[in-house]
Image (cartoon, rainbow, N blue to C red; front, side, top):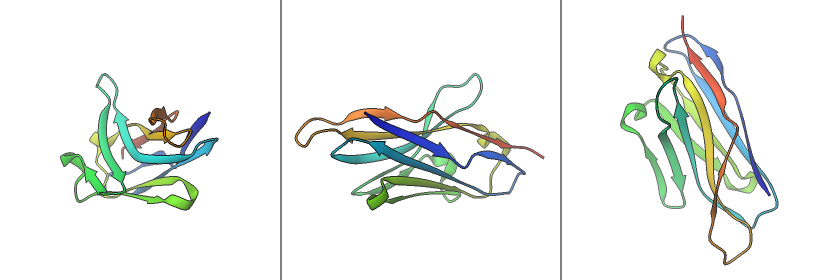
Length: 120
């Protein structure tokens, strides 16, 4: 079973920065794409950023402010968030495509989420 554990959330003032981490653990062959989503109160979950072997992609509302990166050897993904705004307040979720056995299709794994609150 594959688990994703996020950390790094918290309370920050507008204009501040936070760095989220997400580490994959358990028994698996490989972790393919990794993503960060977020869900604000009374809103749908939305994709923030993703990273694959081919590169990275960002939602328009975070371009230029957030950076996704990954340490493959540790199966860990990071989200560096700068110039935070109150509208970035949400629970941030890590998501990954995990291949348990070589040759099998990857399946969707989610973390438990970490709260990010941007407020003065």
